[in-house]
Length: 384
Ligand code: NAD
Ligand code: MG
Image (cartoon, rainbow, N blue to C red; front, side, top):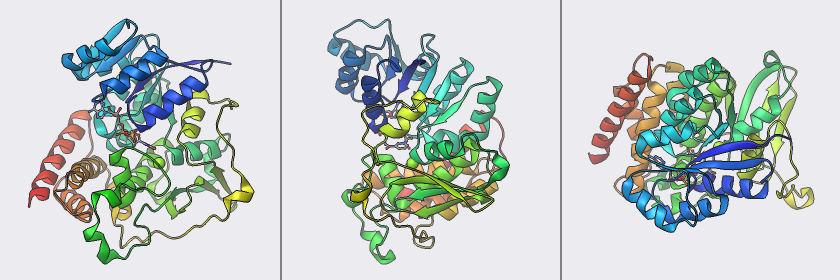
């Protein structure tokens, strides 16, 4: 039995909190050597006092001061700022970095961790949407793994284990459909923040919950799968599955399909990513088949939820287009959450920014520039 010593980026978030529970449940298998938090210092202190990581990272000196006053032990290091997050990602006592920072803030720490020879357990899909080719190449260069934490990708990872990729016909991502799955299109303009934040099957951070309501989450996940499994975007499909029990599927050339199932609790994929290739008897409950009732599957309403086609189009265009889609979406979601735009404006803004920005791929600077420009255009459009 080998133990993973992890740095947990985004410890105060929804994934971060689930990861802390996994670490507490499996102390022989997962040790938290480092942790970062961004806004909520009391929560970071609470987790740090329980798990006692020797290194911590916070945004600035003020946050470090607040954190210190709440800690009941003395860590070896408290890093600050964006550089500090990269230093934490390269912390010598850790072998794995779990990236659970919302949005593209996880990109530089991911690259820093790979350069320092760490494996990545990746929750932050935005990192691969923005810079999938670069991140996967960097992982290969350093002989490191990207272990998927996103439940769909963790499911596919499990279904593909030991398989020859030439035998795979397509990957099928399941989507709950979100709270508006069956709503008539003309009601969506009046959707409130509260309605959009009420996800039927998962409890998650605000940004991904809105992404699940627009289906941009599934669009981002198509691009994430394209890079994680080196699969052409044309061979990645989506099916709506409202119960969120089947987490995704792999269809083979002979027509057989393998699916992975569990309760909708992120501790399942987090635990598997951190204990892979072993399976550990933990505290997670198995499915009770007789209580499960039925599992439904239906075609997405592509016309009502244009996020899927926008994401597929951006992936086909390649270059900086996925980074543009991702950045415009991040801004539009923030504008919706702030009450400044109507729900369908999120799709409209992303579509409009994709028409205006995006070119050939290239290095990190080109991606960051496309990201910056997309954010600027999206903000202007949101103000119109
Ligand atoms: P969250 O909003 O609950 O938590 C985000 C974390 O990131 C917090 O710890 C916050 O302090 C930190 N953070 C935010 N901005 C930061 C910045 N600029 N720099 C450093 N740290 C920052 O989000 P979440 O729901 O836990 O999601 C995290 C990531 O995991 C997202 O990319 C999401 O798409 C992905 N994911 C989440 C779930 C889920 O069930 N919540 C499932 C699959 C994938
Ligand atoms: Mg997911």
